[in-house]
Image (cartoon, rainbow, N blue to C red; front, side, top):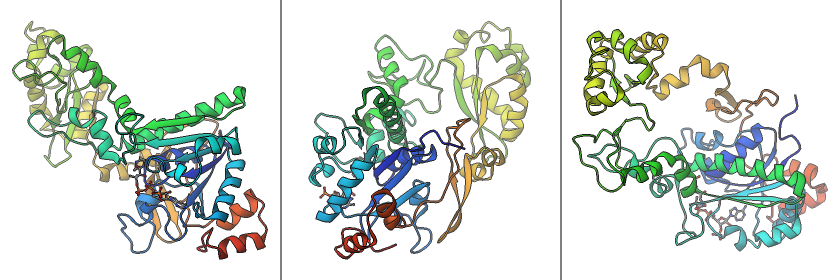
Length: 417
Ligand code: CAO
């Protein structure tokens, strides 16, 4: 079956996590992603956090599915000629180097546009224009500067980073949308354009509700925060522990048998107050004016969740969920990564996939979380370093065997393959 991005060629200059997340998604939608890596070196993540000696790490394999790898020294003269030919052939160039790296290679946006006016040039950087524009940035720096860390954790603890890679993968997702949008606009304009996503901006976009709360706090206390009514509010959004970010109060409650992930997240949605109270054995509170309305409950949320917890501690998180779900109580178990890896329904939808790799054997990965009915995603293993160098030079650029051998002898392309 045809794929949504069949025929789109991506010149992939990305490394580590943010850029590769973006190009992997485009590859899953059918784009031909040509990953350019430094000869003999490759993406640094190939060697990071290795679990098997001399084998591409899971860090790399899980972010580079469905791509082809070409090793090319873009600072070498012949390498630059090849790179120029690739710019001519491709629809999109994506990079997430430190600021200015591509310019230092001699490829400014102006030059890239001259080589191919239809190309879309997409970048991830730590910051947008401003005082920090030249800074290198990794995940947690973005979480800290984008407003996530200051609003995550508990009131009496330090700012906390989250396990979700909202700076890296989150920005990669934003960038992918920018690229597809630019491809769409090119249909009418005939021109490429620059797409730029700053990690700080992407994290802030995901922290939108906290900027909402910053403006609310100036008008009075945030009543749904655990600090209300007895705690202290300063002049900026405090950390809210596990409180729900929306208009309905939620919290994490302990379940049996009390292991580190034996918890259930429960939301006391106004509409289900009565069945929830009936389920936990507190029918007397259903009509009690001290408890019956969301406003009456607001100052007593800690007590409300303590009552719910008394009940959940007598059940496993799944037993509690099985009772509450039919009552329409919004709730969800805290799932450990071990449980997620074993979850059959995620395997069936292709969200968790088992991938075969020639040097590492089988491993689990996250498949495409975006499901299109007319563009199925199959997950193909990540490429070995330089695995497709010859194939790309020959089939995409039309190089002869002699030209390929010459480029290899000069060190412009790698000799891994
Ligand atoms: N041939 C020749 N040189 C190459 C090359 C190739 N194929 N590929 C990369 N290089 C060069 C670059 O041109 C750069 O050289 P200069 O320093 O001379 O310009 C050099 O390799 C290293 O690039 P870098 O500075 O991007 O790499 P780093 O490891 O020092 O920094 C990172 C890593 C992530 C901090 C930085 O790239 C960055 O800030 N990126 C933007 C933000 C970002 O994406 N962060 C997310 C990281 S996790 O997803």
